[in-house]
Image 1 (cartoon, rainbow, N blue to C red):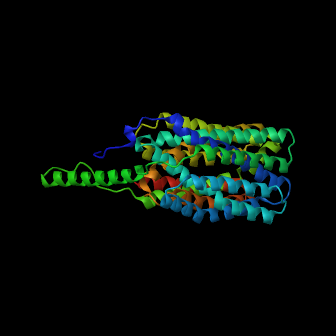
Image 2: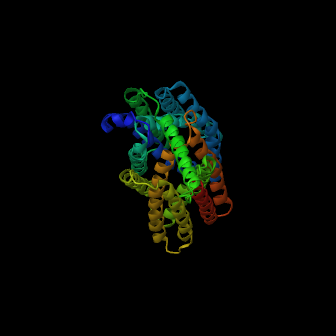
Image 3: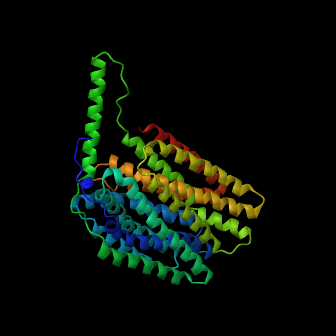
Length: 419
């Protein structure tokens, strides 16, 4: 590379730079608890059905798609990131409080959808803060640290759900705990989040990629003019195919995991296990994610993350097919154990996938479109969040697992060919 990296000349201060992530830790605690509590609350209290959960999630994610693009555009346009993070946390707290005041499924869907417009507002600013605080060589390591740190918060939130469920906390009391955690995230972010002084790293990476492409083209042309055989191919990465892979991966994940708490609740009930064990199983799933982020952080300086994407997606496709055995096994106790192992492996693979795709997206997606990553993920998630519960209720969970495996394989084909 011929460009001089100013970021590379600044000593790393991980302890100082990481303080802004503390608020996000408690935010993930809140939504980790909410992620399992809410679908179980809707079904067990008979407020709604699996299809209602799918409709609620799909509506929220659909509305979040244009919102994600807007927040990504406006934060890059104004070069202010803290204000949108604070707005996201505060607005989410208000809507979560309103959740506790209703038992109407229709009103719950409306509130959840409205919250999603603001909740997604912290995602793009967070990604930019990481990208602009470190050089390109440190992006994988930095994203892995952030995702692992906040995944630990998510895990603790699930553990908290397990504890609250065992102590018989009411739905309203549990929601107030969620509100309190998210308000704490807002207060901590007021003090610790700061906007970057210099914003240039993503543009610098774009310049370097253009210069590398031009240099490679000149080298190939020179060899051909001198009568030597070409030593390679001149080919740009296909951003559109990469984006298609993201959408398909998000679609498959959402098909699989939106109804997953209900599936896990069903097999634990058949095993005469307490309802709180569902939280514990998802704690282990989150623990697999933490392990994945630690692994990604240690391997962050290795080459080949593009090649790794395909292997990760194929692995998740195979895990989806293994869930068919969980649904079909007559040995009920072993069902719970096998499902737990599969979910742990899902968490590990998803962590690696997220670190690699976040880093690559910051490289491929130009400044001013920072929200595009969340838009693409939202498109797939919105469709899958309705398809998964609908297929589960109309047909069976086996059909859900087969559909997810097929879409994961299509995502593999996209990531295999984009570069």
